[in-house]
Length: 403
Ligand code: NDP
Image (tube, rainbow, N blue to C red; front, side, top):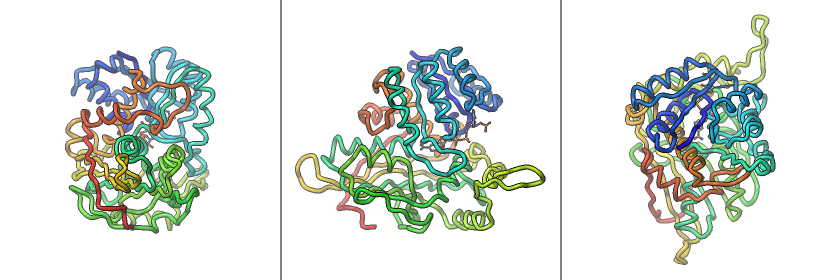
């Protein structure tokens, strides 16, 4: 039995709040606040219709720390679940410290003026959360989130050491639009246009964005082009698995997506440098995001599946030499929509956010300070994943990846 306050009212929040309402024995009192209250009310109406559970809604600018502190004190939650944007991570963490409440998010902090996501800003809060006896759990989505839990599950049950790791994220869904992103367009485009980076022999190797590509045959989706990218869990995985010699992240993109993105980049529409337009400063990428289809509007038309997983190679736990395991989840866009009114990209993030929240409010995962998913026992999380809509599959491969 617990009270939670969720911040943000996009697709990820919608899934998480629906799933919390479906688990009223864990989340007995759910509060939802965001910048636009009407979006909270729309989620609350859907939750009421689908589950019969009532939730309270509020308007808040999460960057206004005193207002956040007042809201937290009024609601009295045991956990604040940050499903707004990465820019709000630090102000929400500040508010949690001041109000004396635990914190959880799904994406690491990124300054607005620089497309550079790193854990250093949030890791710097460790001592303060520790002193306050509070827990901050970072990155409880799918990637980051489940990908880290999958890796640590392999490290607990199959491999003594992990020599190399490849994370493969495939969205095989088709939304029928010329160009759209499956989660917040501004955050998504900042991520995919940033230079690629992977971990190799103790250092970061940088390559230009969308240049290194491999083909991979994804079960229930088919063969897709996967591009090397930087993704934030590479930073935490390389910290918590010190023996890792190489860690890479791959994401699939279709030719049409790449073609549109290339044109938009070439004409300057993905820039985050302000330009003067009709006497006003505007940021081209924010304008583009306003023009593109809203991710939450794609659910109704999206068909197909996501397939996200990790391939790890290392020394087997049972002493049988080097082994390679692939662990993944396949999620159907239409099933996700039927259950929560949101497509699979929001679903695969919102469900782990609910599960991470359950781990914290039930005290299954405990600690004072700032924690990444890698630091927690993967077993109870994996158990809930299977039971709450994201079943996973583990197979042994013939040998290490050859790309
Ligand atoms: P959306 O853009 O759909 O939703 C973001 C929500 O945050 C909106 O309701 C928005 O309000 C609200 N918001 C923005 N600024 C503020 C503010 N200052 N104060 C209060 N609320 C604010 O995003 P998604 O639902 O797609 O994604 C949510 C988060 O999940 C993002 O951080 C994203 O990076 C992360 N994510 C993580 C993944 C993972 O696997 N780990 C995968 C996908 C997403 P408004 O409606 O007014 O704009």
